[in-house]
Image 1 (spheres, rainbow, N blue to C red):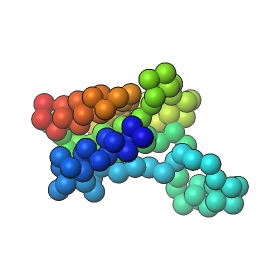
Image 2: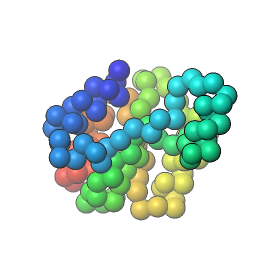
Image 3: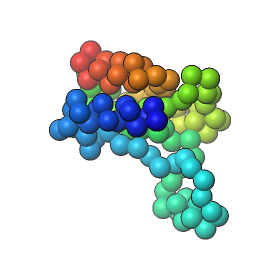
Image 4: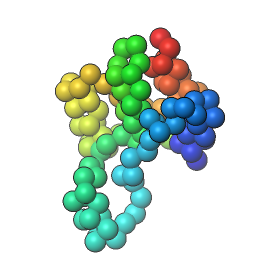
Length: 111
């Protein structure tokens, strides 16, 4: 619900950029055949929930992970965060509230 609310706000605020912020369908339960097909098609464990392909002042793109207030990153998510920060010019953020998400987006775009 949090991620849905954030995307709804973003699409309202920045309709011209809506296709540059997108979800990565890594979560959810799947049967073994579907999971294997998705893996063969390039779904990767640990990839962030959202990717924003908008060049900000500091980073050319950002990866954004949605967590509940008490949620923690899985091992694969920590590995992905490290890869993004060390091997690309992008950055990685975790948000736990609507305000966190809004601040991440606005800081990336305007500061």
